[in-house]
Image 1: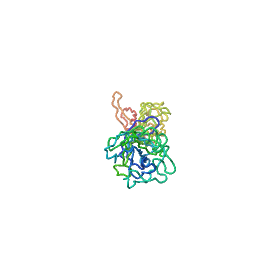
Image 2 (image 1 turned 90 degrees about the horizontal axis):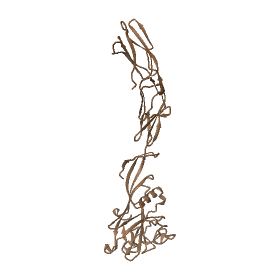
Image 3 (image 1 turned 135 degrees about the horizontal axis):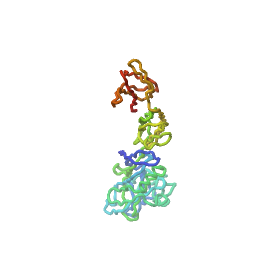
Image 4 (image 1 turned 180 degrees about the vertical axis):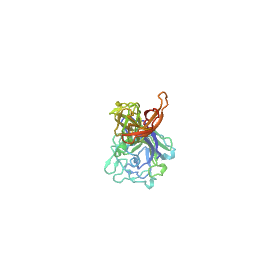
Length: 397
């Protein structure tokens, strides 16, 4: 099996991110022949026969493949090929007639049987069936008859063929008809309905259309094969939030930022809400609120989504405080103590200017607030005559 991963676009509530495309080839697990020439014989342990012999007697082959051990039950069948290998034709092809062969889905159960060839007949006619083995006359010898000898269309097997192909070479291949795909999908969904196919010549009654095909007892290269292509949905996992958005206090006029860190399959989508209302500008992992105002305060959450589902963050509470201001200046000799209220996560710079006629302010000192709102004093050299101070708040990271 060789996997190929294909990305698909999905919609609705099916949480699927990809499909895995796989192809497998199976060998038959049971095959046998219903032979009109010896209608009470079983041919479960010899080559398969289908068509009409040179003597005008018919043969039909049964073949079955086991899907469940190889293909997962949620697979979607995309293509099917059933192949038979011709191992013998009438009189070594000298009198062989061409015909179209059909595959029909079997509607009833059967077993292969174990009978091989009669020594004098070189493996062409089988030997008398044991109880339960299929023959031309019986689905299970000694207990269940076919609805008509050789199987009846519509009751023993579908009246409409699942596939048809003209045999022109040593290989008879039925490829990707809707009927074959439907059959295999049915058997995958309901294994108890898998009774295999019946191989029958469309020209039954025309002499020399019969062919011998390799069976599961033949060499590997001659055994019936079932090639199946299918896809398997690969389910995405919902996102996981690693870093939650943090509550904070924002000063009026500054830019406040919230962010979330999440991981998950495929592309992640984000939707921020403010007091339960979706924000049209909140569709990224970070949310920026420029010129923060009192109306911007409140509860913020973000929902992170992907094809596998969604997860909502914890609530981050944004509190509003007016822009900071210098609350007091105390003079003591040549030292001025500047007092103001700080809030967590902010860095403050005290700037000084000796002459208001000038425009260039110089930093007199800066420090960062701790994890709780505190009051502190910044000591700066006092001006000899006069000095003007102002307070600057550095933007939040």
